[in-house]
Length: 213
Image (cartoon, rainbow, N blue to C red):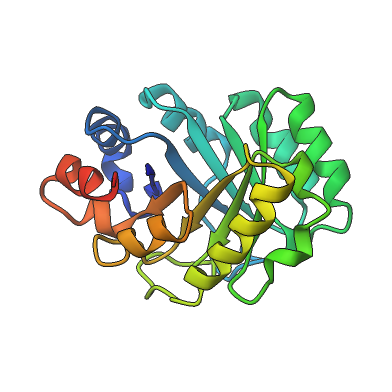
């Protein structure tokens, strides 16, 4: 299991230190939540702060857009050369076009599904995707409780993925901890995002290792 700690739960007064700590602690990706205050009722960070994160990080960035104008934000963050940029399918009228745009920058493209959105909604996009992110909380805030219906949903997505594009990764974000990591693994999940679970621990490297099952 790959682990992508979400810096939404980091100490923003010591952001560089916290990013370096999770990278030294063995994380696989650094998850960056970008919220615009419109698609979700919260406002987070822009490219100036993420540029500083990129300089501090020794692991690739995984940028998760929770925004209304996806194309604008893709163009804003593409120069930082993250490993992944993901966007919400619920907000995009032309997802195939946006996937190709992300890939034109040499960045891997991912689509995000909110808890209520079925995996079948992206069946005809799967062949072009590098990753699908399943939300296991409603997006917008850190520290929420895990919605366990993501387990059968991940199973359904895995069946589709294995048939259409076995190289596409399945990621889960929200309420992930050592309590549900084995169920997620059994459901076919490849990557987990963990914010408060990692950053609230005294030993963050141990928290990361506990998810790398």
